[in-house]
Amino acid sequence: MIKIDVVSGFLGAGKTTLIKKLLKAYEHEKVVLIENEFGEIGIDGDLIEREGFEVFEISSGCICCIMQKDFIGMLSRVIEEFKPERIIIEPTGISILSDIIEILNKPSFKETCSIHSLVTVIDSMNYLAQCEVFGEFFEDQIAHASSLVLSKSQFVSEEKVKEIIGSLRQLNETAPIVTASWESMSLEDVKALLVGDLAIEFKELIHPAHRPCRENEFDTFAIETSAKYTVESLEEILNELKNPLYGKILRGKGFLKGPGYYLDFSYTNGQFNVHKTEHKSSGKLCLIGMKLDEKELKRLWKAKGGGIFNWLTF
Ligand SMILES: Nc1nc2c(ncn2[C@@H]2O[C@H](COP(=O)(O)OP(=O)(O)OP(=O)(O)O)[C@@H](O)[C@H]2O)c(=O)[nH]1
Image 1 (cartoon, rainbow, N blue to C red):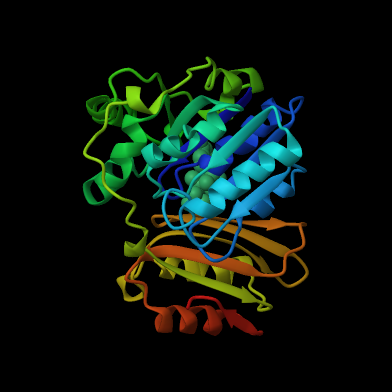
Image 2 (cartoon, rainbow, N blue to C red):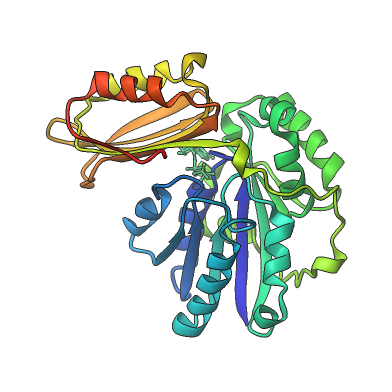
């Protein structure tokens, strides 16, 4: 049987970061990753391919709803052609986990695959605040998880961790909650997150009120560009993104050219990091949020970097 691990979590929670660790931990198995991105441009797939792993990408929508057919087709192809021992699936941050479980429990997949784990990553820095606005996006992912893993826990107080656990327990009474900082985890610890063949059956799951995926409430803004940015100019832009003038930006990520170097950046709910990298990049980025103002965003990215822009937002 092929083991399937699904790693869920809201936008920027830390799914890709955890998956990179899992892929290392399962280096000796034949593993395939199916990566689902909400935006028009795939960024995470490139980050993982850089580390030498096999990635299949589905972008421009969630595999639980509008990209469901593509997902079923891709999963069938991966099973037939690659015959992997394990498939790791990373849905978008706003996917409905119970809908994905339902797909995995289709008779055609149940013959060859079994769900090994349903891990939901919880962003310790942003969960409580985001819960107030996006609570219903978390509900299903938390309620159907077989384990709940806190990311960025080293950046918050013990009280906050306790508060998060209290909130998680209201939706899921039984899943183990892992609060240890990932930085200190060995590969064996990472594997332990997934341990146990849970053989999860959809009918055995308790449903919170099932809500359909609401991906059309989110906007994306994507660019391919030859423009060059310095660390400073990129940080200025990312700082500027907190301004409501541009809409509510929840997540951003991309690779850009710099003068003589390349830059990677990641933006989550106002927190960001920029790294110089030697990995060559064609220059691309994606922002996800609500009520994004395309005109203002285009002006911002153009003002700080000269070059050719290919806007992929429409
Ligand atoms: N230090 C630290 N950084 C983390 C941790 N988890 C995530 N991050 C950072 O948080 C940012 C977002 O992490 P990702 O792994 O890309 O999040 P994601 O859930 O895949 O995000 P989406 O692409 O929106 O689906 C990145 O800058 C990570 O480096 C953690 O436990 N510790």
